[in-house]
Length: 100
Image (cartoon, rainbow, N blue to C red):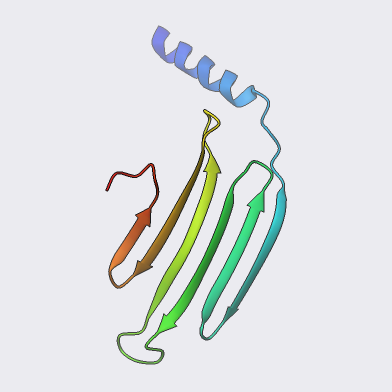
């Protein structure tokens, strides 16, 4: 029981800690029958760009091919960028910190 009380106090303390306010610096998006695109950038260093293109529109094997990237700053201050493709071949991320 003592461990449960300590655990709850740690959670409450973590939730009470001041949180950094994050604002959106840039945001844009579009969508139409051929696909979509969006981009955003936040004050905490997060960025994301993505486009999706409809393949084989109106056919039985219709799908969306997606390309994009995202960037974030880790708690240690290191900035990471991940580029990815998601299509009939699956999700394929590429980044210098991801093992091949």
